[in-house]
Amino acid sequence: MSESLIVSASGIRGIVGEGLTPEIAARYGSAFASHIAARRGSDGFVAVGRDSRTSGALLLDAVTAGVRAVGLDVRDLGIVATPTGLLAVEDAPDAIGGLLVTASHNPAEWNGLKLVAAEGRFLSPEDGEDVQRRFGETLELATWDEVGDRRSLTGANEAHVERILALPVIDVERIRERRFRVALDCVRGAGGLVVPPLLERLGCEVIGIELEPDGRFPRPPEPVPENLGPLCELVRREKPDVGFAVDPDVDRLALVDEAGRAVGEDWTLTLCAELVGGREPGPVVTNLSSSRSIQDAAERVGAPFHHAPVGEAKVVARMRELGATIGGEGNGGVIYPGLHLTRDAPLAAALILQLLADHEVGLAALVDERPSYRIVKRKIPRGGLEVPELLVRIGDAAPGEARQDRQDGLRLDWPDGSWVHVRPSGTEPILRIVAEAQQEKDARDRADWVESCVRG
Image 1 (cartoon, rainbow, N blue to C red):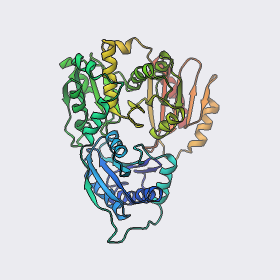
Image 2 (tube, rainbow, N blue to C red):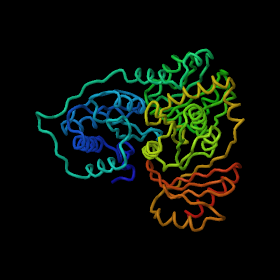
Image 3 (tube, rainbow, N blue to C red):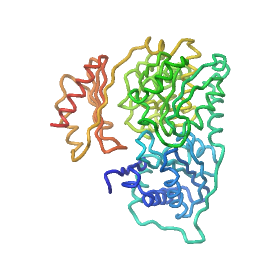
Image 4 (cartoon, helix red, strand yellow):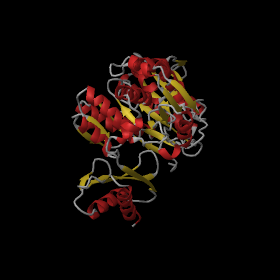
């Protein structure tokens, strides 16, 4: 298998034309369809959709062919945000699963497939492993007179907007009264089809850039502060109330305050957790690589706080286990079970506007009034590293009295509040290092120490 193709329990992702080809996509579609047919039978359809990447239409055709080759029908959603696609699967009574062609925040040369259960959430790790196993086996295909059909399924974007507006946690009239001006960067991804209509229904004036969903990303698509220069410039020039940026498949929301400062993606879940946790008692869950600020938010509103391994499916599993009222990941991904169990950037945008409307102050004040931390992230090529042995060596060498958490890689927490998390990525052939402390130098020192251990 090519190093530019990553096959895991959550799906596949690879560089198009190298590791990820139409043949691979078709075979993976057949493996998924075989899994679904074994679990739920063949009555119903598999919903398919894609983000706006230039390779998306090609791969969607291929994966659709793979599903039909096993004998299952397909309903095509077209270009949709990932959370929109999951809601469409949940809402359609005849949907027995879904496949979404997307590489999320990866660069434009990448694409992939995400696997959706009939309930409208990603497959469990166990079911994903079954798909992965079938992908490596010889599959039984349908005869010429039993292949599945393909039709369009429309209205998913509009349904997503309506579901958000109907949430009790969203006071639509109060938000409309504020007449927010919102700067928006959709990086020419699928967000241009769902975020502007939602904001307009909330009474916002939208000042948008890169809204056309043609997949020709004008900048690195991950919505991290170093990639948000154009949005920050737009905010400084146009003086809106807030700036929003989403990634190509619209499950992550990043914030820019009214001064044109990208505040960091951890603040999205931090502020949403404070809003929801203050209204709906229950646990808050986030992954091991997320900021301490999210734990602070839970403590401010008296909500129990819990960590989960990195990965949306694993966070969702912990949320279901604990009955969490909100959770997600510190990359701007907010999961609110009151809507559905997946990261949802349009939902997060509505929650942030609700918080701003409730407090009647700007985002800058909300952030500056709360404790802040400095986070440092590193990537190291995994190459030939023996990761399990490496993590044991790092844990054994940890200075001071560090508490160890081995749910996912290794997280070390020190009494001064600083921490570091090191783990192999599930989406790229790299080792990720995340460190945080109140002072950037301390966070950098923690990351440097881990990197020196890795490089040996």
